[in-house]
Image 1 (tube, rainbow over the protein chains, first blue to last red):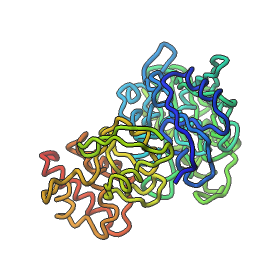
Image 2: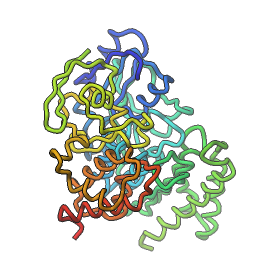
Image 3: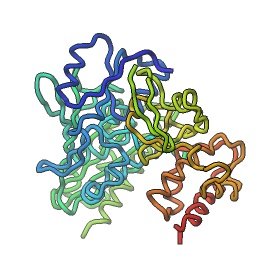
Image 4: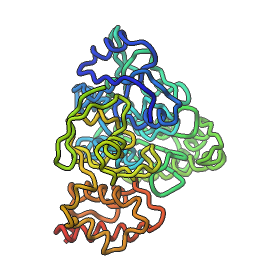
Length: 284
Length: 157
């Protein structure tokens, strides 16, 4: 049983701030609730009131805009997997979303919620990082944007200030030759948190190659290696430099899901596999 | 307290619910739909799976107030009197049940899958049922039961 608390379901963003203003104590915003309610079960969170954002229409949009793909705060992982638009131009996001938890949870769990929980191994971070994503934040004082690579500030900590709300994300659209991949290592074949997750994205037209790595540092790691890959040298030389850069930029720990040593090794293995897959998929 | 409307297996219920009430508890303790089970209580095991507005969900991590206006399907709605559904029949025929604790959740995940994909591949089945944990039967007979159910419904041809 959860602690006694009050439930609110606002219909507009403004209403959220009214509720926050007129209530005392600890608040918790949620869409899917798949993280919040587990924490409430464990009594690690005991909010005095919870605000369900599923009534806000703007948050439910998943659409192409001039600036890129808009993913509203209520868009679930399964909506991402099922979206034709995502599968056409942002496929790495669908590849990552299917790795989040299990089917029933993905019917509730949202992409934005995955980011806001800010677990170091959150599956949606690496793919969104390599595509270059902006977090759209609303508060009573107005709007602001946070680049995703500045969003996570620590384990389960992020750049959101008190009483700020994430409205959605804008994911940059890339050149038509762009392609990505996401690989996740876990202990079991079924649903499990990641021991390590690596995403990569390559576009020759943009001369852009980047990796996103999860569960290998306190915060997800973004690495733009375009300069190396589109610079001088053979493929093998560039690959070696990139893998060295990967290891230099991660700082994994030993935990129940993996050892530090294995995480370092697998980061390189996955980065190499992704690079080779993306390279071979292009017109050379 | 909030007053909500809920449709469960086609029957409408108007209920006064506490804000912190959990959907699984409402179904089991107040409406007596005890088919959905509480296993882990945190959305990991799938024993509490019900279908909410056409999608399989774990009812142990959903507030009852969130379900206001929703249509819920539980295992109890799968049979009419003594007549069981094609999915239930398939589970029996494939011996995909041992202790039975996970079975209501398995059947509901299967129904949600077949309703949107009448011809699931092995991979589709594995993805749809990965959130339903069975600790005794093993998964091959369950996968076979899903395929048999698809056949019975005229899919998988």
